[in-house]
Length: 541
Image 1 (cartoon, rainbow, N blue to C red):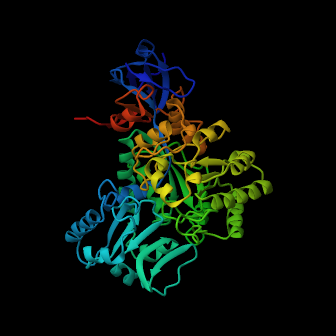
Image 2: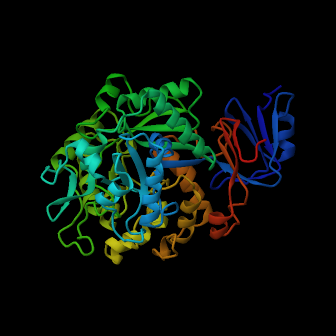
Image 3: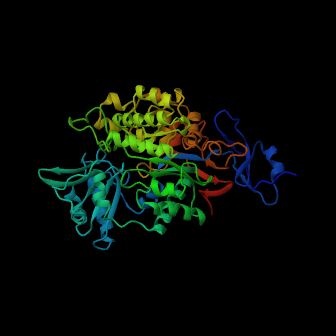
């Protein structure tokens, strides 16, 4: 007699993956898919201990894979002031939110806020230091742009950090000074001058953040993610926190850990000493790639580009590291056996990174390493050809076009920005682009991401090159199987087939037939299954 299933989903429409038959039912046993097929075919696998869930015609699919986010930050930001355009569309609303937080925060303690976009604020600019002073005169304040690459500090925060109008900016950083005085705006590495003075969460606080962020992902049908810069907040304590969370049953989602490899803050050496190289771990928690930051953000005007930013003829963004240093680091990490997943948004940064990858792969060939270009926003056809030849993969987040497309058009030539993140072109070339949120840069909600892939329109409805639209089955493949492929995990996740992990997302609408607008505005994840166990139910009693 064969095994009795732990869980059976029946009476649904189950999309198992591209090219696979749509099933009615699925059986899971010991965390894996045991069988898929019709209700009748699953019936013999139901025993006394089987949990049976009637999908009642609802749509199910493999759990989503967010290919690039910051899980600890996602959890921590839940405690920050929400400065997003949804919560604070005007400067006054933003300052009111900071003022309200100050009223319930002991004097002298830090106030963190995140999520604003200057292009979406009614003032059309970054808030100023003095405006934050007025809202919270007795607290140090650090207000971070949605991208995470630009912040505004108030006077008290700048005083604590010892930053003045004559403070030299660190390499790869910007301190904005106008008419001899600080505006409070700091970009890229200069933000560390402030953040280094903000108390770092202890391991328990990190575990709380992992759990809170992970539960948020489950509520959207996301069962796997790549944490894109482990070590950025608390160094090796983050590695410890992840393993303790897993040990104690507080790791809600499967995580691929991308290790911060930037000079000065890298955790690669202690990880290497502990044997933590790419691929080490299990199906719940694995060591993934190493990350180096090569530039900033496009909306923040710090992505390193070959074209000057609109109305700023001398601004080509921020080159974070000299080319020789990038090539040396990439060669070192490649030789040590790590996959690399480096941040490059502007075409100049992408070119610098491709060149470093090419040299490392020439010296030690291994195209199956699948080195990644994270974000890869302003890449060119010539760069795509080089990437394809070398086995380098673009790792975009299509929601950027939905959330920030209009901001991009405001800061950079239209001819460049409309073709940003050319999903269909990449797929036609045989690349395996995934997608994700880069949370807390964008919200973890997958619906804007799907809507963008199906329409190539921004949240305001601006067309961003309709020729890059893909169909829904392709979009779902990008969000599942391709994410797993980029992380070198396609052997056990991304499709619902016998032997693969039983990670399932159940939605209120049939995504295969819903319109893009129905997906965006009128669809919710109703149930999430991880490893054959129901871990989220929207209307659970």
